[in-house]
Image (cartoon, rainbow, N blue to C red; front, side):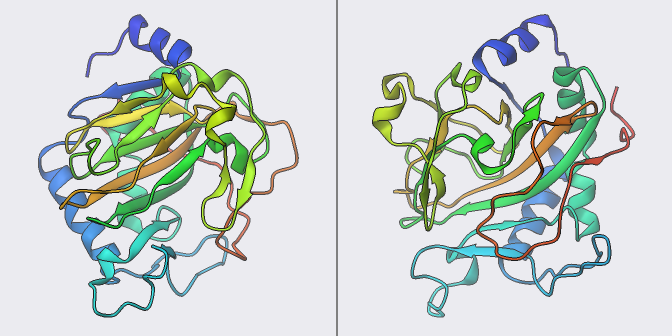
Length: 267
């Protein structure tokens, strides 16, 4: 993978960098398979986090879909999270050498990982993710955390690909609380005319500053839009405020950023 000064400049100025064909071949095939197993409820937590072992992975459902047993489970799940802390496979994929290489290049440092999430936007009814900055979900950090988002299915405008506002990562905006979306921004509070779609093929990845304003629209297509996402920090990350994660998951352990070893193949 060839990354240079132009890539770092784009990330710094626009707040994001798209890397095509980031995960390919058998690695992508296996991730595809494991995500389906996760969404189908076939995987359970197998490793503890500082003594904490949840019964199930944290799961959020599409509105009014949790008890719809007439539909397959994978068509009812909205997202599942924190597999990295509780399953060996997801710890390995979250530390994949191709992902690590880009993040360490952009941070110019070692890499810490905080959490991971599988986003499932089912065909026809996958709801939108409202406009927001991820910095609204945790106390201020220096430097900002970095979000990673990998397309498992092709992500298109029709099925709800990411939309973002380039350069919007430099100011933390006040958010509004919502019972389903968590924290959100109203469209009249941002430069909505600058919102652009980021269409991606399977295996493409986007790395973006956690302060970047972004959203996704509902899935109006006949195809699902699955994605694997994670939050990373620089090795020299500083917490500028007391750390307490804002979450819709209820009581969770005090997860924190964890330094990960450079994987074999990263260079």
